[in-house]
Amino acid sequence: MEAIEKVAQFLKECGTYYLATVEGDQPRVRPFGTAEIFEDKLYIQTGRSKNVSKQLAENPKFEISGMNKGEWIRVEGELVDDDRIEAKKNMLDHYPSLRNMYDEKDENTQVLYMKNVTATICSFTHEPEIYNF
Image (tube, rainbow, N blue to C red):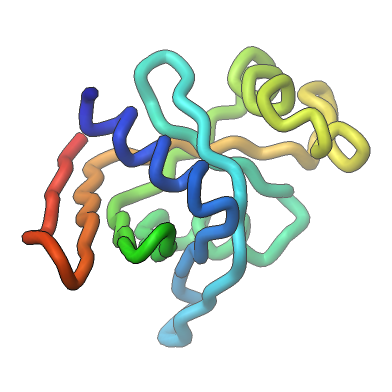
């Protein structure tokens, strides 16, 4: 399994993971639940009207933390906005419950892909697994 697939699978299995951004000198953390590979890139989804979108526009660095079955993941890198309808449609097709709030053709739907990623999966029972993409 490729690094990007391993990380996407782990995030999906978490169900909810936590995305951290910065606002000035203040860290901001909130729950997220989307993770989808499209055109060999790992994407998440949010709304442009949300503070997280504004924070990432100012500073694209992020960190994610999530836990699943006694293991936890930390993912760090940068998030890049992809305003293409195809990328938005792919995400919403994989998360149809979001369609009651978002549409690939609206101005609010935002998908972002990860770049310069280092992901570390840890537990108390094995050495850390490190993935880069």
